[in-house]
Image (cartoon, rainbow, N blue to C red; front, top):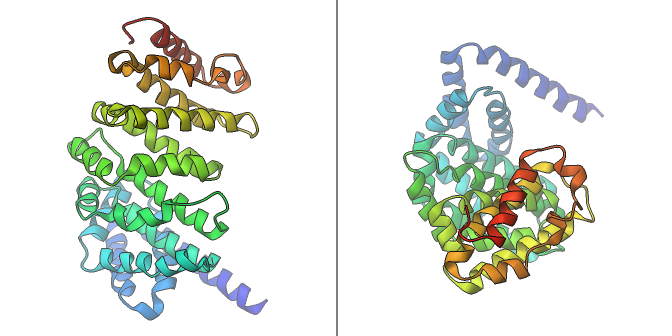
Length: 313
């Protein structure tokens, strides 16, 4: 149709302009300021969010993404406007009327916040501003959740994964702030009820937390909490037998188990872990997957040693 052709032409023109702008830092800065100003015009906001997402995609290096994230974070009203996009969708969660167009618009807003999170100062600032609390309602999904909401859930988990960077100067504080937002139980909920992509990103976040000493202690602090983590991971492994699983997702699970096994003896929950350990991980059920990544068999070997010999390593 004429309308579809017009949209394609407009998008091609945008990408051509962006390509030219990428070679000139001053042009990139001007484009950033222009998009930020345009974002304040509510009548044109949906189109601006699309353009802004296209511009984010064009940032080909980490340094360029960090620079853009820094300017977005420090620009007046930008975060407030993006949060308005989030809050505006709340009623759609109650009456289950979220459309794909509304989902796409919200995902575009979330992607801009994720771009902000590429800069360390913005990461800690977003957490101190309690941004995850605005997003938590979207993570309480059920198995029969409507398709548009699944895209939103995935975008939010990708944003949280971007926030969960602990190997930097703010890393310790970021971890504690994330734990306060109930990120662990929400990720476990997403693993239980999400689709394959949602489960993969939620498991990545859980793995990142478990690989930190404070995060590991949090998950093992209460027997019921430890048992829940173990049981959810076991159910996740059970799903691998009925779907095509990538080596990366399997690796996340093994890394979670390996972290937990390192404190099982100390916490007196080693028997609980052994009882709930999925035998599929060590009976060659996933041999065709582990062959693609030699690191996985090595981790599984260490995991077995940790569960059968004290002290673990």
